[in-house]
Length: 565
Image: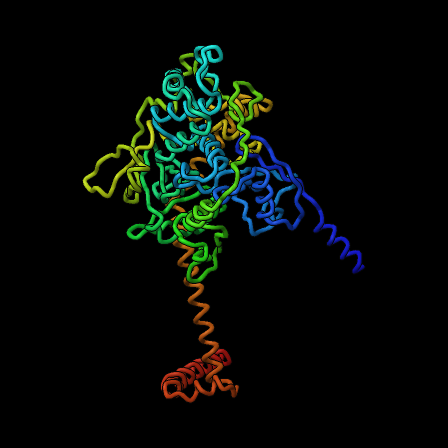
């Protein structure tokens, strides 16, 4: 029996699992790992496949069975982290955006960061104004199709490619004009470098948004950038706190707290799992960008005085160490296989979306509002906490900011339209029912969907009755999803009850100890030393003995009354 158990255990450990990792150019890398393989092993395999040395900026993202996104922890088993049935599917993404992407040592690293920022631009995570958007899209065109050639590029050629969630004909013409007149002669590497330099100056550079609500119930997006913690609401950045001003990050259930020197910011995540993911991302980003050495990294706990919470420790190198290590790289530049932008469905490097010109004008005005045109200004969102914004240098933030009476309190306008990253809210890959819910929510809110999403949901398009029913459920979920005031009251009541229970437990323990000291005959050195102190003798004869006689008298009187009756 023992031999059978040992053989079964060894077979379980030797079992291999298939893993598929989606890369930044939408190609896939497939490998097999053993059951006890750590995340670092899979990540090293992937970096070797990509010929990548400056790998500390990147990570592997996956989605658990509950549709919550996570970053793969390199010190833990891959199989235990995923908790899903093989084959496993993950994504290779930029985890820590370089503070200066143009200063990266190798071209292969800059190219991968370029692909990530291009994805951010398309999915609405990198939001900017019209002029900046046109220039960024022109850089992408120049990098992937080269110089303008009248024979190859007919009128309206830029409209065949999708750079943003939504397009307008005016923006497409502006992109083509810049590509024709200003970028001729630039190599792909030069265009990508200029793209990175421009993207770095935007307010939403490096933003991986976490959807939350503030204490007033207003929607907000929280994010961690190379320069600090940011909060985006509407078309404005309402908070920016530098990393050296962040003193503590904490979460309890669905509530996330950020402690600054003068204020405490409180936000509510959709679920406790999302809040924990937000907290862990904050811990990792603060350690990566703030610390001088990885030896300074400490384990962080979310526990309070009486109850144990989650514990987490960042396990990688910090930004300063990564830059020092990159400076020592000496090798022949690796060959880069760029995926050219081809206006066809087979192209893996670009996602094609709807063009406004193919939509009726009335519907275009109602639904397909250009993300870069911003046809209406959004009202400022009321925020319960004081609006605070700090600049981290004119080099990175050359934007016009609204002036206030207090110069230290400013709101940075990030774009002409509200920040609403459609595809970054839900995890990737998206389950079928989650995709339908996302599409339905966009239809209700008057937002558009990409061609890919429409194709994925085409096979299971709900009927009008189903849409109405799902719409009612969605509205009910949205209305009852987060009630900050009720949650605050419930949390306060729970905290009071916990404090009462802890206090009663401590009093009970002290009472037991007092009885043992006064009534027992245990001759232990510890008890004997306490009994011989003058304070204990005084307490025993002046307070405890009279109190014991009073209780004994009351008990005898009650017993006598019961006997008489």
